[in-house]
Length: 231
Image 1 (cartoon, one colour):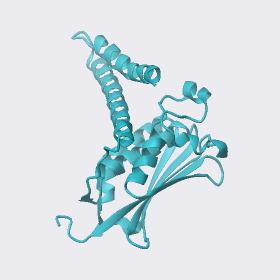
Image 2 (cartoon, helix red, strand yellow; image 1 turned 90 degrees about the horizontal axis):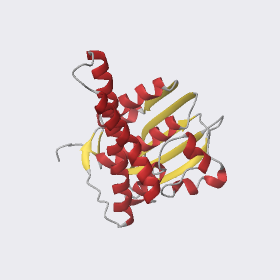
Image 3 (cartoon, helix red, strand yellow; image 1 turned 135 degrees about the vertical axis):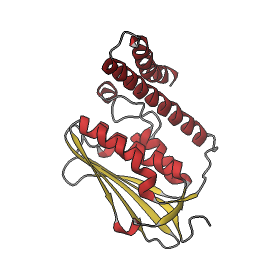
Image 4 (tube, helix red, strand yellow; image 1 turned 90 degrees about the vertical axis):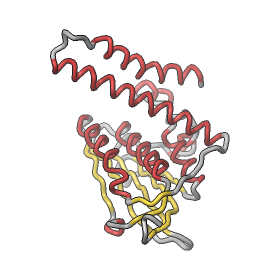
């Protein structure tokens, strides 16, 4: 674990340090902005890695707390999805976001941080393992016996997950095979975190095969519809 994390943390740290070392008063404005942007990307990646590890530690020690607030789903995710659209486009992949009409102007009581983490990891994994085609994120409000559930469904046309590996990828620091670690960066925490978040809030996560090619991950999170967002 320590060896793996040491490598994963060094990569963005070295990237940031390298870009900062290249920045100087002699740079053109274009060069300066490019180096600055790359350094910021590396530091953002490093921050996300540290946050993910801390979340896993909190989960394993039963310290992850749920802090519900009233939010509308679309504004909550807009900035995050804008970043992913740009990344998908640069990878030659289409990212389609489908909000069900039943979410329009609806206020939900949920933990905004846990929802953003769930969406971030699912979409990040889908884009990472899709070399061509598309990634579809669908969000909808579905009825349940006792309360409403927020559906977060991510479908991709990527490499897919073999049936024998579907349980293993929910384990911390696991990817489908060691050869993937050489092709695709990451420590394999994404699905683990989503799985545990769904369990902690009383939801579910399941992994299915896409009808044509790739993977579909379906998360259902219990939410409360509220009439007064300030109430």
